[in-house]
Amino acid sequence: MGREGMRARRAVAALTAATVLAAVVLVSAPPAGAVTNPPTFVRKWGSFGTGTTQFDSPSAVAVGPGGEVYTLDAANGRVQVFTPEGAFLRQFGRVGTGRAQFTNPEGLAVDSQGNVFVSDDGDRIQKFTSTGAWLMRIGLPGTALGKVSDPAGLAIDPDDNLYVVDRGNSRIQKFNGDTGRFLNAFGFAGGGNGQFSSPRSIVVNDSDQVLVADTGNHRIQVFSLFGNFVRSFGGQGSAAGQFQSPGSVAVDSENRVYVADTGNDRMQLLSGTGTPLATWGVTGSGKAKFRSPNGVAVDELDDVYVADGGNHRIQAFGPVPQPDGSIRAGTTGDFTGDNVHNTSGRGQTASAAVAAGQRAKFDLTWQNDGAFPERLRLRGAASTPRFAVRYMAAGVDVTAAVVAGRYRTAWLVPGATERLRVVVTPIRTAPRGASLSAVVRGTSKLDPTRSDTVRFVTTVG
Image (cartoon, rainbow, N blue to C red; front, side, top):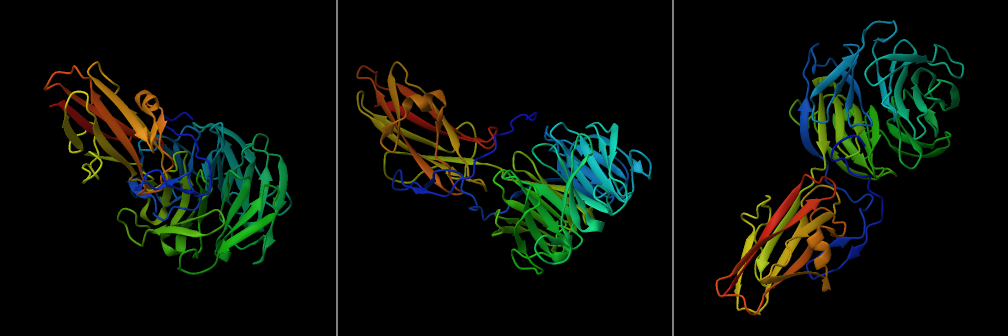
């Protein structure tokens, strides 16, 4: 993917309950529509101004194939590019009507090769390389097919075709992204299915469906790649699942839908069929607060980037995976280490003393403390000449997989746990006072930089 640590997209599957041990809650795969917690605030960058990393009414945001965050700095007539952490990389464009210039740019998209498409008030779409070199113009003013009027949102499909919200003509147009050749169009003015009122944003999901933020009708409409109407959801209002002039729409790796609910100064997360899952944000300028959020994009890590137009900044939200291990000596009693996260096992250690040839048992609980369904990879210490170490899951010996770091938990919904038992047996000739101090580490599948460690200590008594 071009970004270190970028994870593979997760498959969508139905939620299935399973019981492994008495206290275990599992799912067979990451369940679609199971998330009720909104993404966690991660960072923000930008302020009002004309310098680098400053904005004047940013109107759109997109993510490149390498994870770079492209932002459309509308009133400054330029595109600024950042790392996912918000570090400035480059910029291109300026205010004007000429080539590589912009007047009130509103639509932004990046194809699989890193080429950048921008729409503006000049009734055109301009195409650039990832570094800002001008390549071509798509569209001329007009109402005929292949011509555009007040173009807004842009989207790219898996074949790098370009979809344009032709707002002034109340329709969607599809072009070949390489040549600019017109391919298809659908929609006209109105409030019925497949009709539009001031549409503003568009995205293509992994199921080859086109989602349009039908802003004036306060809804999201869903179509096939050929423009056949599939469904719509929303409606004017402030309740969950309702919108007030939605300004942007995006999807994540599980086809969940993120809507910049511009008029309500909030973000909404919905299932692919429109079931409300979460809302976050209120009017304001603090973190996770918004003033006219009008652009949203989701990267391969399911990090969410919001163009917070009225606050002249970008805000980033994400799952922030967090494995949480805890441990106890024996098979009864309290666990230690809950909500303690480190890589040393400090504060999450259990000890046992046994005679040579006898077994010490430790129960480990691994919990998903993150906001999204998660799967953990467990790696544990191997046997030594004096101590035999075995790992058991639901009565099954998984020692080889744990020692090799290949053992995976089931998919865990947020807050769910899986149990692992460690059995340590000192050999019969182990001297009194001999000790084994070892660890088991749980690592996030979603973000391998996130892990937690528990420690078990066995002493020959």
